[in-house]
Image 1 (cartoon, rainbow, N blue to C red):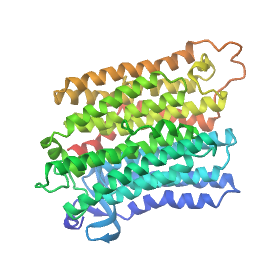
Image 2: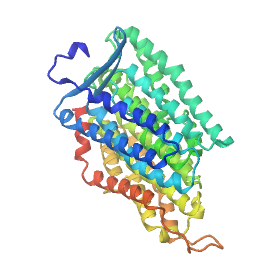
Image 3: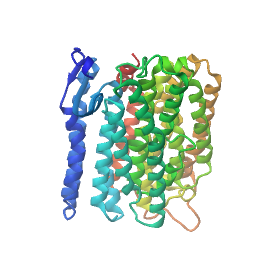
Length: 498
């Protein structure tokens, strides 16, 4: 950053540090409030609101072409912990900060409704996960990105193991082994090699040039690229996806955090940040890295959807849907056309609001009826119309139907695949849409038009508490709004692609 810090477009802003510290400080205060649950949840709520306000304060500068930065400290020459807000950062920062607010209120109803144990630890670790996610979104270099990436892994482990039973510990163990092992085996060596080649790990300010010197050997660039793709295993790309369905043993608010707010979004954000800012569009085109990557993740898109069709447990079906949908983001960037990159990046936002709605609904169903399996949900839509109505809206987004947010994603990806002259990718997108219909539509249909299981009546079943229902409706409504009016978020995407 030093070489360009005199530019009129580079502005130092200490609020970047404040944005990162708010969830950290909030978690520390929450830990001291074990005997005061109302105060604990008030602190969590205030922290989420304050973080969202600070992130919003960055918008005017970023939309006027400014890049905000703040150097926290230096470690070695060319190696520092530095924060940065640009168009790319804001896409994820706004998602994480806004959904934390919604998730905090939903968690209150869920955790209290089921009288869950260790609620103080839960709230503290939830805030620490957001601390890591915001740090990732605002990272100015690969080193800072790596530090916060690891923070997310460590701080979400207690959340996955929350129930402290054999199933919980097994899921958490698989989760931490997959994520930390891949980071150490692939990501850390890649960072060291890039530092040796470049002399620093700072991201450039456009998506075309990349970081690596022009005379770097092609085989070495390809190796580093593969290491980064595999090292960020939170992106859920097969075959390194098994941790994600295994983490479904966690409480539903954790599943929502993993699948919509923090963990998987950190994975695809880091992956696409590396693709565009470490390697760059020009290098990826020159070495033909993009199209093979697109076809590689296409396997994940199709296979995860096929597996989702076979799952009766609602959270498991949603988990494999996440595995599939995450690869849309990587596929769009890998096609390297303007429209495809736009579609991939905007799906970070569109998927987040729709998927958190779906997981919130799964949790509301469990709190209201203690049912987990789709086969047991016949007729529930007639007694829980708002809950299943929100599920239907979010499902339409995942399918890519207008006017919900996912339609914007599918439109850009389809246009991008034609720009890239990739008929195979076009067919993958069409096939995946059909599969999306296959595993989402039956859930809503069964809920609204199906019969109750034998021996059961609809008497006594009602909507989940308002503390859960209101966040569900807010998230579903946002999915519709950003589907009808996508231009606000697209401004930040266009700031990336130009």
